[in-house]
Image (cartoon, rainbow, N blue to C red; front, side, top):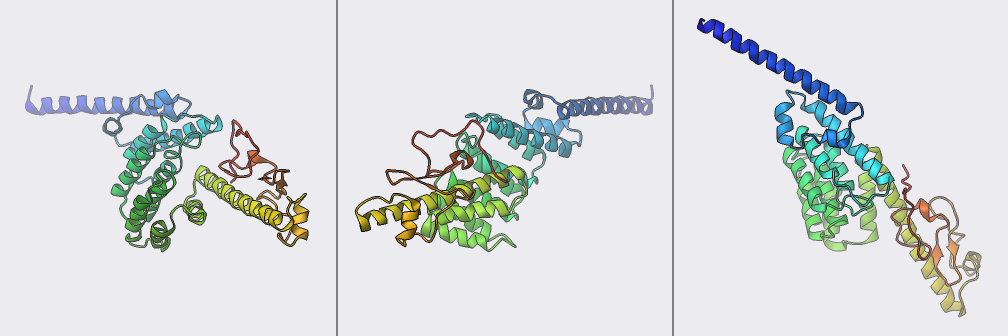
Length: 307
């Protein structure tokens, strides 16, 4: 057998193997796209190995893993789960296959870091994920924002948040908001207005439906917390002036303490309780609210997020 013949045979064998590998991979991809379980999706859980065997289909696999990550979190969140064990590996595999899928890092910042049942309770993994995103997309200021968001909201590390926002403020074409937030972290960390600014920015800087709904629900909760605190101060003021608690919200209006009957974000009047506390009429409509809840209130199995 001549050298040319051996080369031809070797090349043919390799070509056949590649074609067979491609066919098997595409069949596997098709199974994954049409109802495979998450265990099937994670059959190959190593991002490096997946990239080796993807045969150029990294983008397609990244889309599949990203879809699975969103579906997985959505199902678990609807069940008000206290465990999201697969969320971190799904997001890590997704971004390893496609390091430029910015929404996956935003999703991790919003749902990987917060404690259950609102997230996976893995802020360190979320930080690692976003830092990986920054290394691969160093000029995207939104990733520095996501990093600062995690440090502020979930780690309560205001110095870390300030450093992240400051790093992002130096990126070309960064939003001026980043410099403001860096200063805000250093001067007024922990205030209600700071949290509101962050959730507004989160809502405005993503197109992902779940992230936007989550941000909107937090903003609604912040408004309720702020209004309940204001109303309870008004009740205390009435008591100081009259020596007794107001019998109704109307009494606060008549006394000139309130301009009108206060309503919650859904348009329902707040309830004035006999002991002077303020409650919302439909607490199930306000996940994340800290104030205005009836004593012993437990959230429903399925939280209501508004988009």
